Length: 391
Image (cartoon, rainbow, N blue to C red; front, top):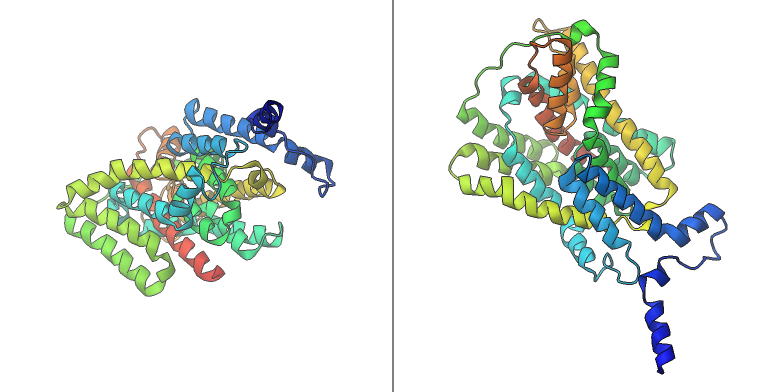
């Protein structure tokens, strides 16, 4: 090889030379051809926008920043970082494809979650269950109106649970080709809880309903808090074994928190372990933001269905609270029903904030935590149902 050929080979291996792909004769649509040729540049701009949302607007920064950076790396031409033998590809295979990372994060969530408000007021579990209506509503829409397959529709529907790890866990098993779009959709809408939920909550409630003050919750004993995760796991084993990986990880983390004899393990799950896994989870999810996987009409449909699923979930919880008030002497403030989505604890904070806007003496945070943690369990149960249904 002479020096001219060497310089030519070097030039052809640069990023500048490879950012624009050659035209594909098999693609006849002009817009699709444009996306094919210039997709890497477009996705880099999309990932920079996601970084801006995470850093400047602080929209779920702990996950949006690594996801966006992983997306940047996956769109670098030639080096194939996201390929099977690349850095991100190896992480994805070990942690996402095998389902390890979401389960570890669920352990951390369990270790950080207080189930006391749910134990003190068990009927609020119905609100967490009603919020799962968004999952199945979006599933039917994706299947009947948008032409997705049943496994793809199930993966899209789980966005309505507002639970990122659950969305990733289900999608990696049912529709891994949609992982990037579903993960970005799930975490984006989780971050937008303070924007999306209040208009729906106010639309479905009267000012008088939003003013309802709830009585103080009873104290929950340590014994109850220890027995509760074991009881939840036992019920899952009996009724829905497909949900046991998620429920088992969640209840193990919570048991370590409540039993009081393994503080070091609980602290590790709440801090070091969940932080480490969050880094790898975000980067590996970002590896699926390559232009050929993300820049499709399916992605647009997923974003639309995601917001519909999340809105239906919010509405389902609020409406269930109003229905329960028809049969209850002690009235429930319907605002806490919106916390049935499992965006812990942001959804509960939003319920409290909207309640205080109507009545400054209204303190709904602890009451809203009941349906909020029920939503975490509910989304895991819904995931088990979908996995059983599609397998």
